[in-house]
Amino acid sequence: MEDLSLYILDIVQNSINASASLIEIHVQEDIENNKLILSIIDNGKGMAPQTVGKATDPFYTTRTTRKVGLGLSLLDAAAKASGGGVTVSSELGAGTGVRAEFEYNNIDRPPLGKIDDTITVLVACNPSIDFIYTHTTPKGSFTFDTREVRQKIGDLPIDYPDVINWIGGYIREGLNVICGGGSV
Ligand SMILES: Nc1ncnc2c1ncn2[C@@H]1O[C@H](COP(=O)(O)OP(=O)(O)OP(=O)(O)O)[C@@H](O)[C@H]1O
Ligand SMILES: [Mg+2]
Image (tube, rainbow, N blue to C red; front, top):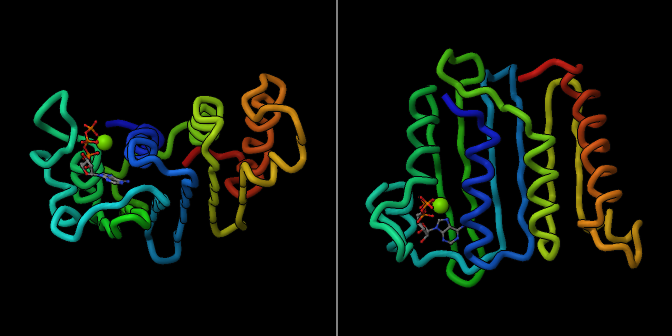
């Protein structure tokens, strides 16, 4: 069983491949309704209506290096195995949204994993892309936005090692507050 963080890396890679300049990652731990909702929204090139429905099909891919596209179909399988599913919405030229829903307490729901490291790595490896990460739990909400970081650091590049270290610490601290230090 893989961590949801690894699925996030994979789905965000689709957004990067679609030339997105802004990628939003939202995690909602809606324990009251027994749901964990993961949404990844980008402003990339989008998909035509006839391909949106096929996006979670493993035999649909616009890859040229192999005939299967596994990212969305694996996420869909993981979500279905834990009582949920994946919805893809997309508009050509505007962007794409992927929403994965899981039963929070389902034994087969993958754990979130090291989401702080995942977000930090995404920022470090894609310095020209802006990321918004929000995480909501019953204890509160946390938001991280690279556009705000860029304003604070002025001329420093966002992938400068000290900036990346700061980002990692900032996200960890924020998650400690809303997750109570416990791992989800
Ligand atoms: N965010 C997105 N924007 C535009 N097109 C997308 C996006 N996500 C997926 N697609 C389209 O859906 C197809 C299937 O995506 P999926 O992640 O399942 O497989 P893949 O990216 O082709 O291969 P893999 O993930 O195994 O490397 C992609 O080839 C692409 O055409
Ligand atoms: Mg993919």
